[in-house]
Amino acid sequence: MEKWHLDYLQRILNARVYDVAIESPLELAEKLSARLGNRIWLKREDKQPVHSFKLRGAYNKMVHLSQAELDRGVVCASAGNHAQGVALSARQLGTQAVVVMPVTTPRLKLDAVRTLGAQVVLKGDSYSDAYSHALELEKRHQYVFVHPFDDPDVIAGQGTVGMEILRQHQHPLDAVFVAIGGGGLIAGVAAYIKAVRPEIKIIGVQTADSDAMIQSIKADEPVLLKDVGLFSDGTAVKKVGTETFRLTRELVDDFVTVDTDAICAAIKDAFEETRSILEPAGALGIAGMKQYIAQHGLEDKNLVAITCGANMNFDRLRFVAEQAEAGEGREALFAVTIPEERGSFKRLCQTIGQRNVTEFSYRISDEREAHVLVGLAISNRGEVPEINQSLSEQGFTALNLVDDDLSKEHLRYMVGGRSQLGENERLYRFEFPECPGALMRFLSRMHPNWNISLFHYRNSGADYGRILVGIEVPEEEVPAFRDFIDSLSYRYVDETRNPAYRLFLR
Ligand SMILES: Cc1ncc(COP(=O)(O)O)c(C=O)c1O
Image (cartoon, rainbow, N blue to C red; front, top):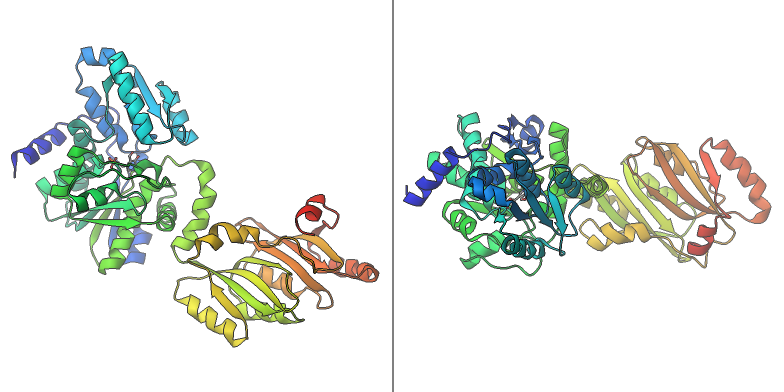
């Protein structure tokens, strides 16, 4: 082993992290293991006191400072988790911490840092802006700068995660999957594991739109990315460190990139397994591992994913839950064209049959054809051609939208609008207890005498299904129509006079 590598091994063995960090559990993920045909272990760094591994590196750096340095105070730049590590360590060591954070930092992380007693300065839109400002403060006030990743003591602190994994799992281990931002975690973990059990593969995981380490490895030097995707905010780094790059290039075996849908699916996997909610960066290890298993056909291996953070803003959960379905290939989305004639709506419903409907949107717009946006729950993508086939057998054309971001992110919320057609339209909101097949039962009870001119349903996971229906009812038939909807025994509200309806839909 080369001298520098031995030096890192010593630093990791001598690292001091347990004044603030716990030895996090390494847990067998039973459901995921059964599903993926490998034994999957989760290294639960999300269980740390500040819900990420970051306090290990920050504390190890700060505890090695001299008293004179601690008296000057420390400064750091961080989009969140490193800041919490620095703030907690400063409190433990009785020193002052100034934390520069981008103005875009999630509220949860901001509040956590303030609660730990650090002084927060909000500056710039990105980590890089905050970083430049922190360097200025370092000079101006003689603070000690605590780098989030490119520092041997920080790397050694993160390396204790690797040390624990090997202590906790003394049986054969095939690979460890590690999220990469600036590269501190993977550099530390790889430094330890490759020194002690070099046969274990270390695989780095990045998002496809924030892959500075992978680009740097290709270019054989750290490169500066112009822009990075911010969904996984914990790993959104435009340039990796010089030292973290060097270690990663020497020690890491392979890399994998994942997209947002795959991260959301991994957050769901972790939730189903542990009932904990990971932040996007925290779920990268699982997402990358799933992808790697599929790409390389791995079976019966022992694989570790480090679940490295759980500082998730609550208001992102809706997005994550929706995308998770797409990421797992559990929702199919189609634009189905049906003839605008009596009975074709019903025929479409019969074709869909017993499948669980996630979305059903329609607005009358053409006298000959109707376009219906249909979302269906599926168990895998293999079912999509099958559904397509049964729709075309009924004479319907179906456009598969499952990979169409425009449809998934925007159009599904916009279907509708004003129509020249839809004469004598009346508008109703209905509610019914949600259960599989409930929407189809509702649709099948709609009276064929009256034409449906607008329909909107989205399964939101609530206990009640909510539907908006526009129905063409000539004035003289209104009393008969009222008798009909009263007989349905669904709760409803007549929205025909709603001013927003008049403005946007009539
Ligand atoms: C939750 C989480 N995962 C991964 C990372 C990336 O760590 P590193 O910059 O050491 O690669 C971070 C960094 O802040 C993080 O907060």
